[in-house]
Length: 266
Image (cartoon, rainbow, N blue to C red; front, side, top):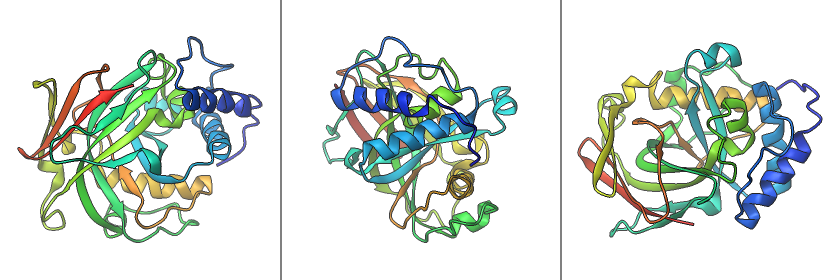
């Protein structure tokens, strides 16, 4: 990705990395907000370098119209760190932390596991080619949370700059027969404290989970980031971005099956 000379990138990254490590909220944005995705990914790259944790996957999010035209993309990406990726437990009580005074939300998502690493020099993967490089599809919940309360309200570039607003991933059961069926057609539901909050199909969101994989493969190559087998792709919020607070119980269902549950902590 081209260098736009966004001089504040390192300072903004340092502020976010420090706030995340200290588990404290940020009342104001720490500097000049990035205005383009190129500037935003510079901040993200600087944060990754400063943070030092291993990346176990990547989250994708939708950039809705008309912002997609302004930013030149209909998706954004952010890292998911290995130490924040957990398996769902049988009782559904796995705790997932948010920044209580920042932004916190839960999202029902199809999780794709990379089986074959994409060519880091190639930026033209098709959906069919990307699908062939996935070796598993699971039900899951992404925890979207940031120390900065305005991360989503301030737009896609601000979201990208702080790890794409990710703060964890809950991996549910593998979805059987995904190679032969159409996961885009499965109904996905999200419940908070037992109340149905959202219901939709992946087909209703852009070009579906495997379109998200193709987007990530191409973007990562453009950014000079090599992806690896075993990394996860959290492919986008199917039912929407649903705010949560400490103490909430979250459940996602896929095709009326594959329940994934977690409890929200700080």
